[in-house]
Picture 1: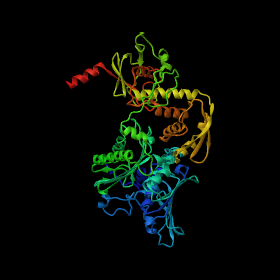
Picture 2: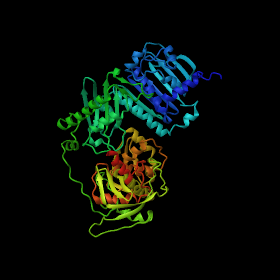
Picture 3: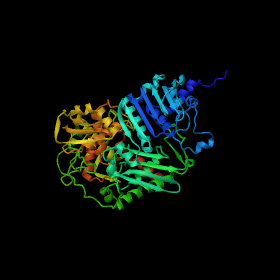
Picture 4: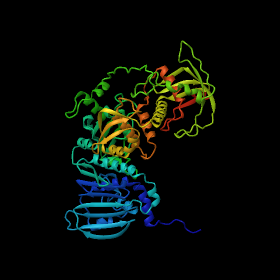
Length: 623
């Protein structure tokens, strides 16, 4: 048998390496901007076209390169930042592996013009598919300009996996924002399709945050600054007014490198415990400066995951720093920020007035996340007979909610995360629910007795399913009738959300919005659709819809679905909300009157069952 192991051709090896570094246009933006930062630039410009698929240009005023260095920069593992294995454990630069340009050139057409400040002429190189087409001397300013054209031009299969221009643009913007936040001392500029999107002059961190996120965010920021023997922590965090129900505006940097760490994110969020509601997330831009020798930044190709020598110690320091900032704000507000009264009440354990549960027969869902009316779920209770067989209702005068309901359980045990369940599963058993003995566990779960054992309902997921179906049906069936506002409202969004809003403007008009674009960031709402209630917080409504779109989705999908999902995300009762017996009973009624009671629209299970035999096994195993 002949030998079968052989070296890969350089072209194929480079394309495989490119797959680790270059996943989409945003990957190119990240790698080249990091190189520009490492080059000591004080001004960096990013130019994008068609989401970065057609053109990505980075212009900097850094140190530039000699003709030989310019040529060598396209070789794999060629770098000026490492000279020995010891350097690998004391990395202070953004890039270091020498893979960026080689990987990018393997899957795109690259033009580089670079000049050192003391040189008379610049070097211009054209590289296509990692083959140098030409190299010549030209006149240019000091610094480096790299233009990446037609990404994946030589790998059509990879190009087809790219998302729409709007989605790719969003990811490129995110990379730009991360680097702009981590280096406020650098002047950044972003141009998209010949339109100036960002012009960020050199500034303080607070001013950089304000310039990026706009909307008077500076008034809702608190400073964080702690210096210990192990590390330095500084940055800004948001007051409770800045919380959201989705992750997004959360930025954590280690030695100015953006990282992702569930443990450290939990440290920050847990510092807000008892100040913000459960399942809500604070705004923060925080920096950790630590000895490079105590971390490993080379554990992932994107360099967004870092391994710490003692991650739990970092967790403790970080949580303490955030708590200290929150506490200090309550005692001694900083000079340039207003003291937050809501924060003060929460910290001092002052309870607000208990929300009143209205007795209105209006079936419209409440807008308050922490309020659910007794009559809220009554609208579709009667649909039990249409959806489930063998209904047996027993009511008594003394206990109006005393009823025993029989329904068909249609749980799909084979696919717990399939949110496209069509409810065509076979009926596995007929369960009898006794709504007399309904209890709430840890203010999060509803437990009730069924024939086979017990059922556990997740109150948040169940309410999310109910609200989604109701809102979706209302918006789909509603005619596009516009209610004119007596006092038009002006809404301001940050650049990313404003760009997203522009892409769905035609859809908003089609459902009944009357919107005037004042400039790139301000939108005047002259009218809103009839399915929105009078007094709806439009700013909050738009932010929820945009947060849904901000996830990995295309803007061409069912817009009514996006609106309903955003509404359910915002208004579903949270875990930790105490419910009265009648509210739990009505919640159960309405859940099983839904078209798909098994899962909420995000794919989370709404309920599960535990048989008597399973309960007995638990007891036996404990004895």
